[in-house]
Length: 154
Ligand SMILES: *[C@@H]1O[C@H](CO)[C@@H](O)[C@H](O)[C@H]1NC(C)=O
Ligand SMILES: *[C@@H]1O[C@H](CO)[C@@H](O)[C@H](O)[C@H]1NC(C)=O
Ligand SMILES: *[C@@H]1O[C@H](CO)[C@@H](O)[C@H](O)[C@H]1NC(C)=O
Image 1 (cartoon, rainbow, N blue to C red):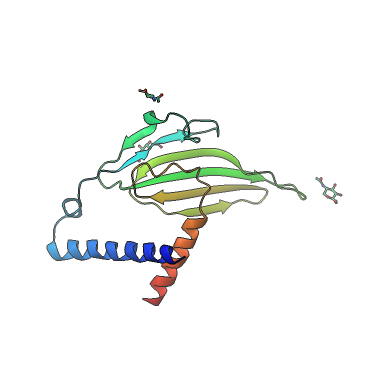
Image 2: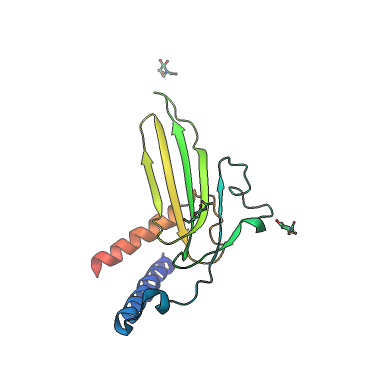
């Protein structure tokens, strides 16, 4: 918990520094930022057996260099459950995308009644960090909660 708070704080302060720098120097944001050295997995899977969804196999063909302002690696997973009055099926994957992106909003959006569509996104900013299956979102939720709490008390 303590390390999460530290991480959140360092995220906050480093972002703040960037903005201050940019504002005071009056340069374009592209010029103010260092070169984009980020590499992410980039692929689209439509079945869970696809090597894009299961990155344990040789996956060097899926590695992609990010360009310009696309400085976040993300995993977006679409899956669904169907329910009858007594039961709900296990979550079935429908599609999974890995990519470099400019804006990344972590978390899940769930829509529907009988058939529930889950669209879950995870975001990370170190090279080849977007290797998860798109289902590990608990830590992100905790981080978001802590960030919100910190922002509220500022
Ligand atoms: C990754 O993002 C780029 C730019 O938005 C897009 O053109 C490309 O189709 C995406 N790749 C995959 C595998 O979704
Ligand atoms: C992985 O795949 C790449 C090409 O896709 C190939 O060049 C490389 O030798 C493979 N590595 C292993 C360990 O199989
Ligand atoms: C759901 O459960 C009820 C009571 O146990 C049963 O009468 C009904 O047939 C079940 N419905 C389905 C679709 O299995």
